[in-house]
Amino acid sequence: MKQLTLLFISSLLLINCTTTPKANQMRLSGFVDGMKEGTLLLQKTNNNNFITVDSMVVKGDANFNFSEKIESPELYFLSLKIQNVNREVGAIAFFAEPGDMTINTTLNNFLENAIITGSENQKKYTQYKTLIKRYSDRNKDLTQLLISAAEAKNIKDIDSIDTLQKRVLAGSYLATVNFALNNKDYEIAPFLALSEIYNANPKYLDTIYSSLNPKIKASTYGVALKEFIEQTKSQDSI
Figure 1 (cartoon, rainbow, N blue to C red):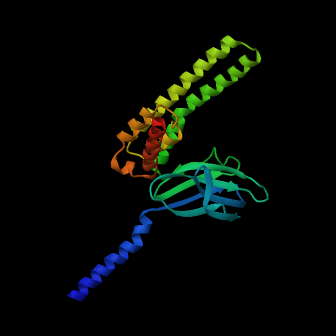
Figure 2 (tube, rainbow, N blue to C red):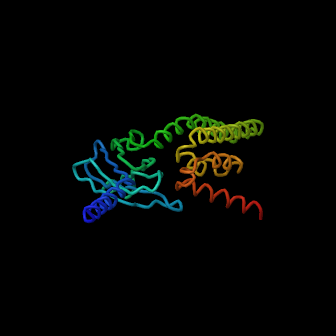
């Protein structure tokens, strides 16, 4: 009986040892239509530098597979480098999560045609980019008007356009804050606080961080947001 119990416990330990790593694995697969040769790079950032964590050389078969351990949902990049061209074609930003994910795209429009599935945070990220695009488009239009006003040396128009741009910026910040608060149960919330409104009024960052549940606070971006807020307060007190 004792031997059977020990065997049962050993079996459980073996199962845990073999399944635990897979629980945190992102299994990324996909297809690049039109690609015959090149190199696909799975990358992330560290101190604003791209780090290649895995790569795959494509020769004929444009299907790809990557496996990466993900401690918590985090922004990764799928980059494409064409043979004999000393530059990367582009990098598809996506929110990596444990589990099965797919990225299907085309060689000619590698970034624009990317279809990403398998990540809840990615769905939220796509929604956010759609929301914020209207602010960025409006700002681009105002920038063109500002250039024209500057060329004409029209000080009145320059001041008016500058005021409008500040309003658009404030509107985009508030939209980002509201989006983060409405999605406080996802890692996208602290990510947006760090990447999009890090230079906004610190009270907004505090509000976002305070709204996060314990799981999100303990995530990669949750911890980073807390450290950033503390660092900002420390600098302000000097």
